[in-house]
Amino acid sequence: MADVIVALDLPRAPDVLALLDRLPEARWVKVGSILMTREGPPLVRTLMDRGLRVFLDLKWHDIPNTVAGAVAAARDAGAAMATVHALGGQAMMEAAATAAGNDLALVAVTVLTSHTPDAYASALGRTRVDLSAEVERQARAALSAGLRGVVCSPAEAGLARRVLGEGPLVVVPGIRRRSDPLGDQARVAGAREAVSDGATHLVVGRPVLQASDPAAALREFQEEAGCVPS
Ligand code: C5P
View (tube, rainbow, N blue to C red):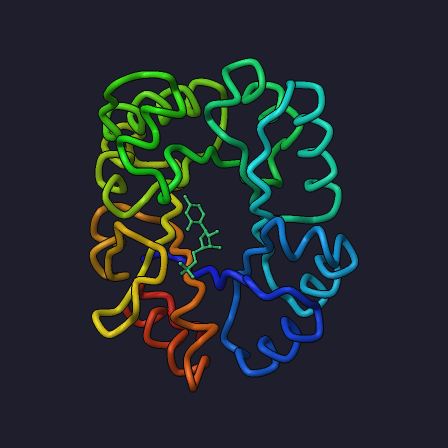
């Protein structure tokens, strides 16, 4: 079983709230940097007042003191989950984990799903890089810094689960049904496959947002993930 998180990749609060009116079975939503920059904490409060769990996906990567402050703000705002980049380093992740405390599940973004091996190597100034080895290295670092888990592509979900062991969270975007367009996602998987690989949370955006019947689409993902609300 995994929870399905609806990625609210819409620019404005009224659009988000109109969508959510059509999704009474949503339990988790993801607020990313576009929506947060436009609408800010009042929208997060509104979402929580509707009984939703909020995943604040702002992918912080800065000096430890700054990231710890941002994480504390997310915790105080009542977010249930938030992200930092594993590449922010050990000291940054440790400071962030301390700031998160017990109530905020802080997870580390490993290799972005938009990176190809060549693009990633180029960003690191290397000629070649093995993405699986990078995800493994970053997952181990996140765990030893005290984070609660990782975000990774479906291609690395099984690897992340093996590296992290049983308890930690494995959050997986890039979830598609066979009939869904890929959009800009390269490495995708079905919900069932991601869950069997060890995902605990599936992030789904466009396949729900752009569906003619978003509620039916969400229900399909929830059924595949084994988390239909009672
Ligand atoms: O529309 P789609 O289902 O592709 O949305 C996936 C969501 O997951 C987007 O909000 C995207 O920003 C997010 N995400 C991702 N890859 C990551 C981390 C987050 O696609 N590595």
